[in-house]
Image (tube, rainbow, N blue to C red; front, side, top):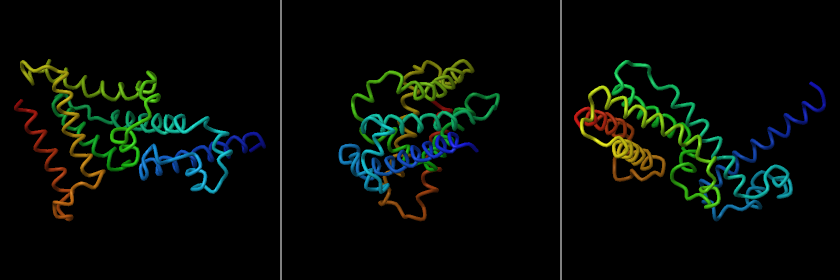
Length: 203
């Protein structure tokens, strides 16, 4: 490996290190309470080092969010190829769970933590999010074409499905299930999803 290649690899490793650290701090402290200086102290470098890679905290948040949505979309590409669209739609909920529980920090940043407004209003920021959402809406429309959800509005259905699954996930990710016995929480989560999937077939 040449000098230039090694330098590029080291730069990429540092960038990834900054991103991982910032993601943890945004999740732990929130966006407003996390500063470039806070991140710099955590990685034990000067703030100037971070500014070599990102112009400000918003750009840093944006980069983390982009990585998160790219990974989220990859998970959605693993949806089953079952001929019955309802089975694929029901399986999508389990994929959503898998992403959220394997990447709770990313999930928090994507769907729970309040993002800075200038990031939210950047149109291309949401392109990957739209792609992932289109997997859901596409399956809902396939189900309607196959005879499910008769007389139902596909946009309302898509919102209901996302809201329900997101609600279950958020309670787990944000540790808001303390009213339930700890040893039973995981079973409760998955049984709730299975029950919701059963209800979908009858809507």
